[in-house]
Amino acid sequence: MQAAWQEMMEVLQKELSAPAYSSYLQHVLPLRLEEDKLILSAPSDFVKDWLVRRFGQRIEISMAELLGRRVALQFEVHPVKAPAEPEPQVEEVAPPAQDPIPPKRGARAIRDIADLEDFSSSPLNRKYTFDNYIVGRSNYISHAASLAVAKAPAKGQYNPLFIYGGVGLGKTHLMQAIGHHINAQCNSPLEIVYVSGENFLYQVVRCIREDRMTAFRRMYRNVDVWLVDDIQYICNAERTEVEFFHIFNTLYDQGKQIVICSDKPPKELDLTEPRLTSRFEWGLITYIDSPDLEHRIAILQRRAQAEGVEVDQEVLQYLAEKIRSNIRSLEGALTRLLAMSSLDGRKINLDLAAETVRYYSTSAAEPVKVEAKTIIDVVAEHFNMPVDNILGKKRNKEIVVPRQIAMYLTREMGQLSYPDIGREFGRDYTTVIHSFEKIKAEIQKDNALKETISDLRSKAHARS
Ligand code: ADP
Ligand code: MG
Image (cartoon, rainbow, N blue to C red; front, top):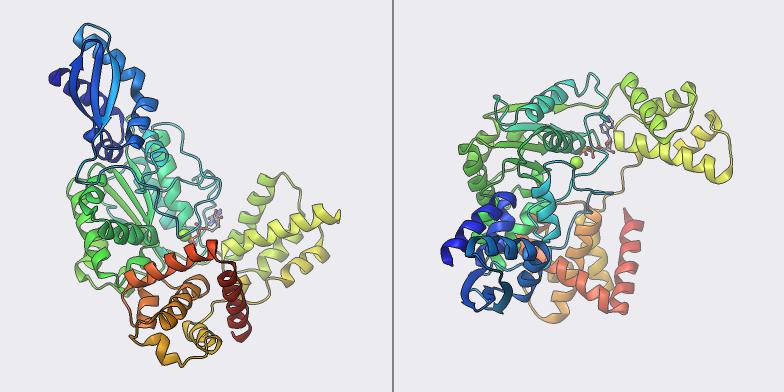
């Protein structure tokens, strides 16, 4: 029976993504045969249900073939010591890509991970394909390199491919386009993992806390294409950098493709692990610049076309002239224009465009960042305590809660990474994550706290 089980598992294993397999199936073991029943052990009810739902019938059929008679599956739940059992997904810190779909062909790996609530990967955004990517002077090298990687992952010298550039210039789009392309082209499904630096950091901290690092590393063992977005978020997070370094090396040594996006070139990243910087320089580094006027117009044209709306060239030109720094704002302005026209039934013309652009007049509608210092001041005043209390080491409740609130708000309003916030408060980034989660959970339960926070938020806004 053991042999039959082994044989069947090997078949299943080939079909399933490795992380899913190792985390779940690996801990399902055949215990004994009782007449027409096959008794299996599962580490938890969750795994049991998952297995029955996903593979129940398949297992019964395969086992019937292998054993020469029909058997029904029965389970006993035996928790295993190494916690490999599924747990609720780590809460997303960053908003998930909108409109996520698992890419179509060969994407089984990604889909499995998603429906297992595993957290190694986020789904790719349907919109981010090469077809929708407009190439211009500012991005053609990054585009060409990405396309080369997508066509032949890990076959060329572009490993790792490191793409950097400012906010909203199309790094994430390009990176996900690589994922989509590989999914669509490859005959054999490749395991593609897309993760933001921030989520990676979060996962590491979470796995350390829950003593699941081994499982975490194992998840990465069979990844074929690793897409790491916004790597800057792991900078200065020592332990996370080290984990990243190990996974990087493992994948690189196995000839797997790695693509990294960042807001800065490697040598300007504030990494505590210098070996990482040199790794990033092993492959190809490309840069995405701000798009020129022509390019911006082309992007708007494509966008309007996709929305199925006719927009005069002069209107597009006007928007493109006014909004320069960032493609996200450019798209936002067009969306706003179209919305204003359809909601108010107004004609799309230069007047309406001028009205739209007014909202974008200040530095292309970048959301206002609030300084940590402002938030700390506001919180200290509100709780009637000196700033030193918040930044100090005292641990009584009257101080700890305001401190956590200040960290929470800094995270929310300051657009800083966890390690950055840690430095502002003189604390480790894991403490910041803990505080953030704590307050986030409390707000759900405690209306008074929710109001306090909203009050503090307005005060902090008013001062910046
Ligand atoms: P980044 O990751 O660099 O901050 P994104 O990839 O999120 O930027 O791009 C911001 C928005 O602009 C996305 O909606 C994306 O689809 C769009 N975009 C960026 N570059 C292009 C391009 N070259 N062609 C079409 N759309 C683009
Ligand atoms: Mg991005």
